[in-house]
Image (cartoon, rainbow, N blue to C red; front, side, top):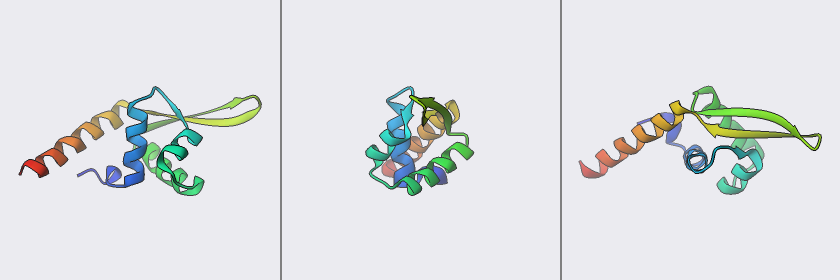
Length: 90
């Protein structure tokens, strides 16, 4: 099992990113229903693990951070799903 994907919040982030090219921090916060600090900590782990890419920009002079799933993250998620499926079948 992939330790980074055993967290409900991190798995929720990956699920949101699978469906979009990129997602803002506030969109991920709404989707995962967690606090700024908690989500930030989980995102930091995913970024550090290479599963998620982070892009910081300014929109109307306000900072905005967007996240996208990397190929490493997509591959890890698929592997995690296969391992979960094997557990169910085994």
